[in-house]
Image (cartoon, rainbow, N blue to C red; front, side, top):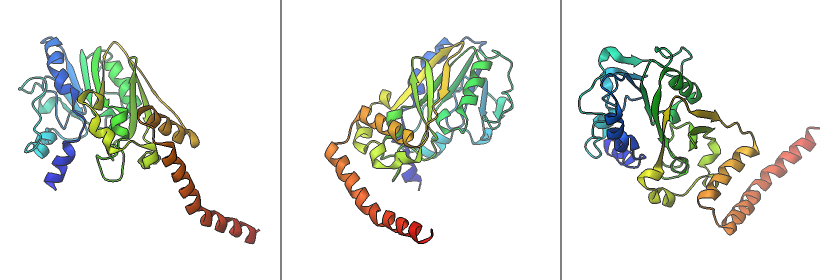
Length: 266
């Protein structure tokens, strides 16, 4: 089991916070108050506070679980500034405001967390309320649309959102279940071609940033998934036409049976 997890970890999107950590660390002033939201698996050591649902004693999950094959270097310096007393354990999607005053913090970091949450809109609003500036990182939509990370699905099973960062704005689209159909996802070959930078996306913000959720229903969900796949790598038309013919042929007996049942029960 440990090895299978490690192999999975090797296909996680490269955490660009690792590459950007030195820049953030050097830009911070000694007295700056910093919060890391969702940092349990690999905390940003310079943070004065960490907020997460998991306990302080179990922090550093990445290096506990995957260190043998893919150790993660420390982020934000080698010494932890936060302590057990400044580790805030809570449901970060709970509707109680975060325990900080408006613009009390100088910097907030939220890396590879928003895609996991049931209400990232709330978390974004609270980040903007309590902090003067910050850094957000999430998987790219292309990476999350690819098959090959886990058997039979696109992206990772615990991710709830497809996210796009455009012009300093974050757009959240629910990760509709139909994305796991091959037609609405991208093949493993696309995943292999992604670079470190195209596997993730990030946003440095100051004062505020825009964020919104896209609401789609019925056929509009499939249209949006198909639109994105076509924007990255369209499937051959012959393949799609063959799939449609096969689907119609397979579904014909069921449709005929339902029609007979309706006639009989009138």
